Amino acid sequence: MLTPKVIPVALLLACLAAVASTGSAEPHPEPLMRETYRPLYHYSPARNFMNDPNGLVYYRGEYHLFHQYNPFGNQWGHMSWAHAVSRDLVHWQPLPVALAEADGVMIFSGSAVVDAQNTSGFGTKKDPPLVAVYTGHRPADEMQSQCLAYSVDKGRTWTKYAANPVLPWEKDFRDPKVFWHAPTHKWVMVVTKAADRRLRFYGSPDLKQWSLLSTFGPAGVPDTVKANWECPDLFPVPIEGEPGRSKWVLHVGMGNGHVSGGSGGEYFIGDFDGTTFHNENPPSTVLWGDYGRDNYAAVSWSGTTARGGAPYWIGWMSNWQYANDVPTHPWRNILTVPRTLSLRRTSQGLRLVQQPVRQLQDLRETKSSYRSTTLTPDQPLVPRQSDWGDALEIVAEFEPGTAAEVGLRVRRGENEETVVGYDTAAKQLFVDRARSGKSDFKPGFAGRSAGPLKPAGNRVKLHLFIDRSSVEVFGNEGEAVLSELIFPRPESQGLQLYSRGGDARLVRLEIWKLKPAIAAAPAEK
Image (cartoon, rainbow, N blue to C red):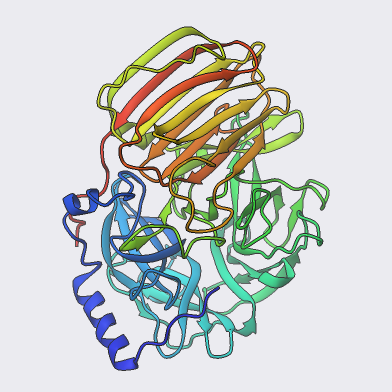
C-alpha cells in the first residue's frame, strides 16, 4: 500500500469535524451524473478514494455498507470507514463517516454484526448493538491489531471500545470477519496473517475476550506465486438442487498473484465445526472467485440471505495495479453489483456460482429482443439502437456452431470497443479491453482476461451488466464471472454481435436500458 501524505493534525481534526457534521456532503445527483465515468447504478463515493467493502450487515430493514475511504484525497491514505445504507441493495444513501482515523491509528478492513443477545454488554437485548470489528493500523511502525466499535442508534453514530485492542499488535495481522456460530454458541473470528498466507480462527463468548481455535493455510496458489491473503470471509452456501444442504465457503482476497494479474480472490470449499475449517479439496486446488481484473476483497452481508439461504456479497471493483491511477475525478473506484451465491455440482466437483441480485431488475426500462439469428464472420448483427444510453443489461444466448469465437462488442465507437466473447476451442469466456477506451494511465491496463466455461448442452449464455466505466459478465448462470473496468468515450454506445472463423446462431438476445440508481431518498434518522 502507498504511504499517505502527511496532513497537519489541526487540519486533520478540522476535516474530520466537517465530515462528521455534514456526512458525505453529497452533491445533487444531477451533477454526479454529468461526470464522464460516474457509474449510474454501481456504488461510488461522491468524492475521494475508496477501496474494500467493510462491515456489511443487515439490521431492521437496512443493508449497511461500509468501505475503506480517504476523507482527504483521491488516492489511498488516512483509511476510515465511510458509510451508506439501502433498503434494496441498489439505491444507496450516504451517511457520515462512521469510523475515522485518530491518534495515529487508521481504520483498516473488518466486519460488523448484530449482537442480538447483547453478549458484549454494549446495548440491551431489547435494543441490541451493532458491533464493528476492525483492524487498527499504525502507520508509524506498520503494526496491526483487532479493535471494536459499537452503535446503539441503528449505526448512525459509533463509539470505539475503551479497552481496544481486543487482540494485540502484530505485523501483517488484519481484516477480521466475525460471525455467530450457533451450534457451538460463540462468536468466531477469521483474520489473516497476510504475508504468510495463513488464517487464524478465534472464538469468543462476548466479542471482547478471544482465544485461538485453529489455523489454516497456506493453500491454493503455489508458493512460487508471490501472493498474500487479505479480507477473509467464511459462510455456509446452499447447494443448488439439494434443499437443506450446504457447504462452507472460505474466501480470501489476494493483494497480488491473481490469475488475470494483480489483485483478486480465491476460495475453498469444505466444512467448519466451530473450531477448524476442513478443506474438502487437495491443498493445491486453486479456485478463483472471479476471472476478471476487477473484483477484490469481496465479502458477504451478515444477518441476511436471499431466498434459500443464498448469501449476498459485493466486491471492490478495482485492482491494486492501478487503483490509484484510474482516470476519474473527484472520486476514485466503485463496487461491483451485489450478487447472490450458490454452489453447483459440476464435472470438476462443487463450484461457487454468482448471480446478480434480483433487485437489479427494478432498474429495467425499455427492452429490445431478437430471436434465432445466424451470425457469420462477414454478417454481424447490429441491433437497432433506441436511445439505449450507457447503462445496459444484456442477455445473449448462443449456439457456437462452427465459429472459433462468438460474442458481443459493447461500448463501440470510433476506434474503440470492449469485446466479450467465447473461445470455442479453449472453452473460455473472455473480456478483451485492449481497445476499450482510455487505458494509457497505467501500463498493462489494456489486455484480455479469460476463465473456463463449458457449454450447457451446446449453448453458451452470457448475462452482461454495462455501466459508464464497467462491464460484468456472468457466463451460464454465473458459472464463470468476469468483472472489468473500462473507460470509453461517452458517445461510444454501439453494440454488435459477431462470430469469427465460422457461423454461429444467436438463440436469443434481450437488451434493457437501465434507470440510474445514483441516489436514494434520505435515509431514516
